[in-house]
Amino acid sequence: MPPTISRIVQALEPSATMAMAAKARELRASGKTVYDLSLGEPDFDTPSHICQAAAQAMDSGHTHYTVASGIPELKQAVVDQYLSAHGLEYAPQQVVISNGAKHALHNVFTVLLDPGDEVIIPAPYWVSYAELVKLTGAVPVIVQTAEADDFKLTPDALARSITKNTKMLLLCSPSNPTGSMYSPDELGQLADVVIDAAVIDRDLLVVADEIYERLVYSGHQFASFATLRPELPERTILINGVSKTYAMTGWRIGWSMSPANVAKAIGGLQSQQTSNACSISQYAAIAALTGPQQCVDEMLAEFAKRREFVTRRIAEIPGLSCAEMGGAFYAFINISRHLGRSYDGVRIDNSTQWCLELLSQKSVATVMGSAFGTEGYARASFATSMENLEAALERIEQFVTQ
Ligand SMILES: Cc1ncc(COP(=O)(O)O)c(C=O)c1O
Image (cartoon, rainbow, N blue to C red):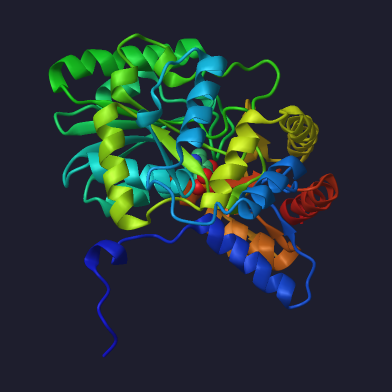
C-alpha cells in the first residue's frame, strides 16, 4: 500500500498557475505553438549589472552559508529603500530575507497563526494565500469583492468579517490577479477599521503584500500600508522582493519586514527550516536595490504599452470586459457572458472548463478565476511579448465568437 499523505497536505490545492503553465509546456513539447498568458513572471532577462554582481559574489567566495535570516548588507539595502521611497524607518533586525516572497509569507503565517485563527482574505486573491494559511491549521475567511468596486475590499465588508477569532487581514495592492490598486485614502479607511477592531481584539495584524509596488501605471499612486496611520507599523507585516520588479523570479529572494519579535521568530524558524536564501542571489539583490534603476523604468514602460493594448483588445471582443489595471501585469477578464454555452460542441459552464478548452482548441493558456476564489473570470498575464499578446487575443476572439 502506498504511504498515506498527511491530512493537512491532502487538503492542499496545488498552484493552478503553475499547473496551467505545466500544461502549456507539455503542449509545446508535443510540437504545438502555445500562446502562454498563464505565468506571472516578467519575460525580460535579469538586468546585466545584477548578473555581474552575482558573478562577482562567486569570484569573491560568497558561496557559503550566510546568517540564516540574510546578510546584513542586503537587510540594510531593504531598510534604506523603504526609508527613501516611503519615509518608513525600520531596523535591519526587522527584515528577514527568504527564498522568495512566497516563502516569506509562509514563514509569517507559520510564526503568527494558531489552529482556529481566522485570516481575512479578499477575493479574488493570489493562489497561494489561502493554501499557505490552511497549512498552519488557521482558517481563511474569504470575502468576495465586486468588479463594480474595482475588486477592492470595502471598510464595511471588512468590519462585518471581523470576529473574535480574527487574527490577520491580507492585502495585496497592486493586486494579483486583478491589477486593481487601493488609493492611499482607501487603504487608510481599511486601516481605521483594523485599528478600531484591534482595541477590542488586541492582536489584529495586517500582512501587506507589496511585491508589485514598483509596477504602477500613471494615474495611480502607491502607498505602503504601514505609512498610513502611526499605529500601523506595530501591527503590519510588509512583504516584498525582487522577483517582479527586477525580473529575478528564478533567483528566489523576497523578504518580510515586521515588528522585532516577529522578525526574530521568523529568523529562528528559517534557521531550522531552509537556512539562508542563496548567498549569491542575496548579493545580486543588493545590486538590484542599490544599482541603477533605469531598468525598472524601461520594463514598466513596456508593460504599460502592453496594458494599453490588452485593455483595448478586451473591450473590442464581444461579451468580454475587464476592470482597469492600476498596477502589476494581469488582466482579470470577465468571461461570465460566455459561460453556459457550447464551443465546437463542448458545453462550458465554468472558468476551469473555459480555460482548458481555450488551451485545447486555440492553444492559449490563461488561468481560471476559480483558482483565485472568484468564478466567471480568467486571468491573462501580459508579462509576455506583444507578438504573443496579439496572437493570443486574436485567438481568444475567435474562440468566444465561434
Ligand atoms: C501577489 C504575489 N505575492 C507573492 C508572490 C511570490 O513571489 P516570489 O517569486 O518572490 O516568491 C507572487 C508571485 O506570483 C505574487 O503574485
